[in-house]
Length: 223
Image 1 (cartoon, rainbow, N blue to C red):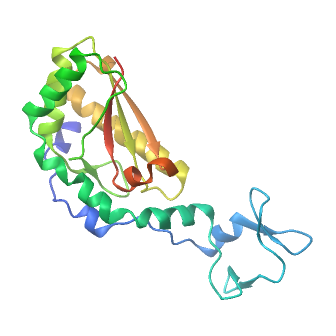
Image 2 (image 1 turned 135 degrees about the horizontal axis):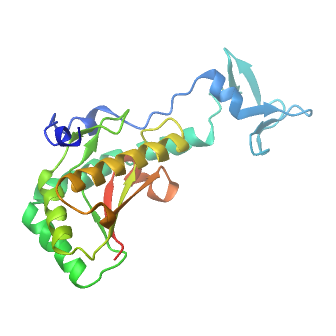
Image 3 (image 1 turned 135 degrees about the vertical axis):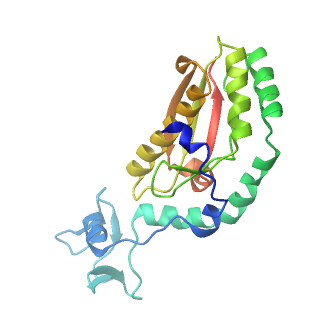
């Protein structure tokens, strides 16, 4: 099944057709807030979002006095992420420069110098926005990394994946973990010892928001 992923090439349309959506149902919005005995609107952390008289319930949504829907923290975060999408698209366009040989050479140098903690982006890999299925990838990058790992059986790496594709931060983390496992499995299929690779899903975090939008796949040297 993993081998079949190598041949699923449908172009780079993902970044141009998907974003980090912040739409939310009235049910989810109301679950994120509640009204206290004093008439204030609070979030689930008990913080006052709007004071009495500054909001109302309209068409199933809490709205402010201007009629704007009151947003959850995750919706605000996703809107900020959307502002970085154009820059992120450009940042990941360097995948075409990754050839098997130069990727192999890069990792050989890192393994030879014991560059523990060094991160390297495998930016040629993109995923279906609703799953862990790979829709496009640079096989040269994966093959180059696999070749270097086979030449350095003592070396260890961790595959780290970021994503903002999930509906919640928990969904994002679980989805990114599955995607990291898929990348690991591909390298094992290419002959790399599974013990040399660990997989970690980082999901959506504020400090790495741009990486999450780009569904960034990184390889970090552990040994």
